[in-house]
Image (cartoon, rainbow, N blue to C red):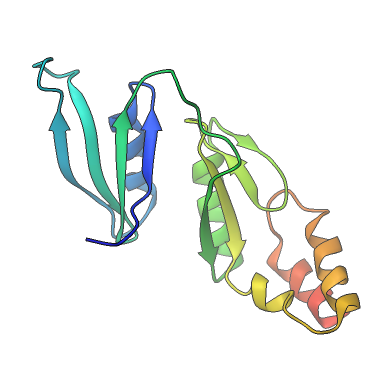
Length: 155
């Protein structure tokens, strides 16, 4: 077991969300389903342990008391524009595009679909260089990897 596992609170649709996520990510699976002890039957799922890309998560059918916010997001580092497009298109379906690679999925969970090389692009001692890359990023909803690379090169 990992030292830190994201624990996601859903309002009665945790299994639906987990199945949606597992359908998108490779190396994903449900590893355990725990049922509410006082509610036998099909609608009695309390928690679902699952893996996305081999990483562990737990989903809870907690109820309407809490909602997701952009204060917490899950970042998917992508090596190619094709990966960016794939994850973006799948996760934003019935969700909301935000800005700078961020989106909210149909369950309200925030994701960052980000080029894996992005943080290297803005890790320069040259602040003008970093500002140029950040300015390019700030014009984007979904990341355009070639446009970021051009800004990184100073084109």
